[in-house]
Length: 168
Ligand SMILES: CC(=O)SCCNC(=O)CCNC(=O)[C@H](O)C(C)(C)COP(=O)(O)OP(=O)(O)OC[C@H]1O[C@@H](n2cnc3c(N)ncnc32)[C@H](O)[C@@H]1OP(=O)(O)O
Image (cartoon, rainbow, N blue to C red; front, side, top):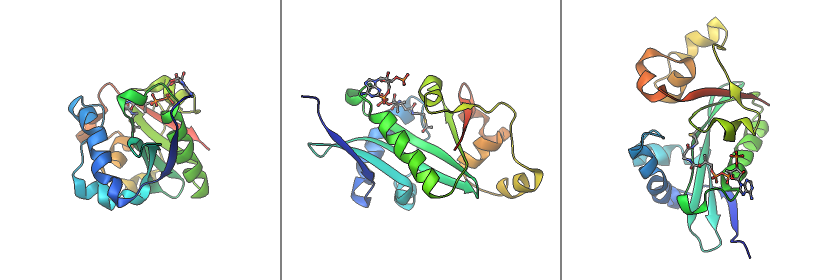
């Protein structure tokens, strides 16, 4: 029988496991590294996938940026579980969270273009926001917001990635 897992809201006690899960991907420059304190501060944004043996096998977060806009970030599945549906299950849950919050656009910055296309994400090209919203967003110290705006200071993060957007 296939091994089972559940997708649930993250707990503070999951934070060390989340950081361990993404550490190899940070080394490979696939995901952005963050200090432990940043994960604790963002724990309410996270969903995790937990195996029936209690192991954290995947994680993902939804970070709100504006009234209608959020970003899927830190989506990762442990190597042993890849290709078994965990990533899609986590993304489905994050998109459900986005709908519950009343959002209408979800951004992501990724190398995994076909995976996100399956969920209706598309290359956002030069699409941006209204000038008055831009003027507010540009004040944020958050790297993800800067990536959404394609600011020069985050070009090293965005290199080779695709900026994608899904309308809900
Ligand atoms: C925006 C950000 O946070 S960064 C971008 C995403 N993260 C990364 O790049 C980190 C490194 N990559 C990963 O951790 C993983 O490869 C992820 C998160 C991208 C995908 O996670 P996985 O658990 O392997 O995805 P999942 O198994 O659901 O789907 C992968 C493929 O397996 C196949 N698959 C096998 N079994 C199943 C199943 N039971 N259900 C669904 N798909 C399945 C599908 O064909 C799918 O193909 P597709 O992606 O072309 O649709």
